[in-house]
Image 1 (cartoon, rainbow, N blue to C red):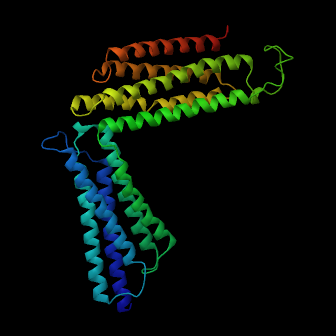
Image 2 (tube, rainbow, N blue to C red):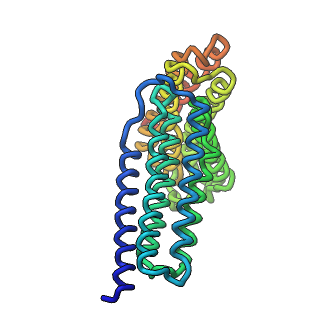
Image 3 (cartoon, rainbow, N blue to C red):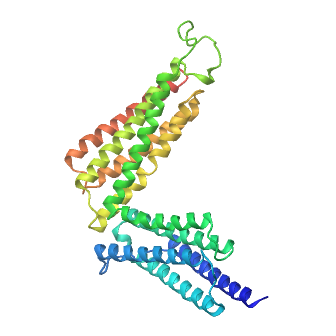
Length: 346
């Protein structure tokens, strides 16, 4: 092996060691726990320091990409020393980012911490991908994959400016997203209903045999769908009203209030998957057993979320109790209506 080949192999070893270190840090961030309590924690200082750490990782990723993107190769000694210095600098920025992430205590809210953690992991995974691409390509040759990987790190770093500033903002982000998904599911179902047509509906009774029902709703199907759509509408109203209450009255300054928001988010995150499950089994051919199971599960979840809202005194006052009680009644009404229509005597 020539001296040049030896120097290149040494640089590759340095990069592989750096890659392993970044992967280890990523695993600790993904699975590790943050501080338990506030102590002297200052949220504003945390964000300032975190953004500086993210900027440093972005800059180091750019340096790595540029260093291995164009010839000529430097001398063997310079190549080895530059590679080691560059790797040390990258690892320092990575460790700094992970350390600042760990400053964020649980008492500031689990929802906020999860979103900061996910953003941090995304940056570290982007850097991991960039290092893997460089190692899989001839050194000093810029590839399309390397350009894309570098851009991926930049994009992940840019995400930090859009992160919620506290647990209230983090909760609102989840609530708003869930509301949008549920609305889309209702709109799609209503669109399908408006376009669907029973080719035998004007000449045959619902009880008489007809063509392939896999492609259209019978009259009984439509009544069941209407009742279930009522439950989905109650889910949308629950999300809309809860979002407005949190936006108007919620805060995350005290640990107990941040915890109330986290309890709400835990329940709310399950709503759109439940709505999607219910909507899916409503399309022809309607699976009545699945409909009964899924509408019951959605009703139980909505009652749970409304109960959490009722107990969350800091954003649920006397005015909010009125619509909480109304929606609880709407959930019960639509569930009973759906079960009556699904039953054998319907």
